[in-house]
Length: 219
Image 1 (cartoon, helix red, strand yellow):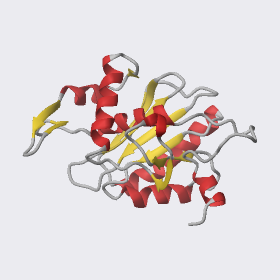
Image 2: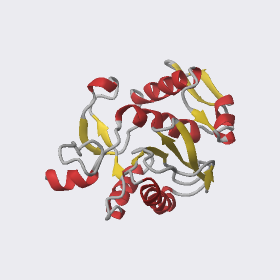
Image 3: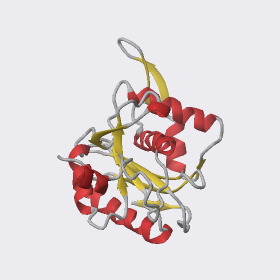
Image 4: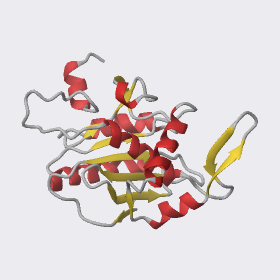
């Protein structure tokens, strides 16, 4: 289901990160972060399979373009079957109303990051701390306006616990972290993705643009 807190506005640039799930107790979650207003006007959160979420996200992305006139950028987490769904989303994007995030080759250094050939975002032992530390800094400095109460509730159940080899930030027993992780991913996109003026012939369209990948690269 979508939780909506305000309408999209003309000229607004939205970045979207979706945390995928494949049944059980997990939720699929998507945070729609406005790079223009630095808030989260829409949140998707539902206990469904990733395959059920994909067409809903596709429709919402097309709606964003129609209401803002700006292509949003979307990333699915590649884990938990997300690779198949991000490729499916690319197929659904026949009208190129949105751009699909292309994973960066150097996620540890935002300023030096460049596009790879992989669609989506891989959450790993290297990228997860980066995601969470970046979100913590944004929250501590009150950079993001968050309206969604379930997201805020997850923050209060997010703890640092000791594993066999290190300390790990995660949801406490019986709680979830899908809204936190999707917001952390959206904040990473906020830092790397830029609004594209489709009327600018000199604009570099390669960053996160699946259409340009099909036309300029050999698969």
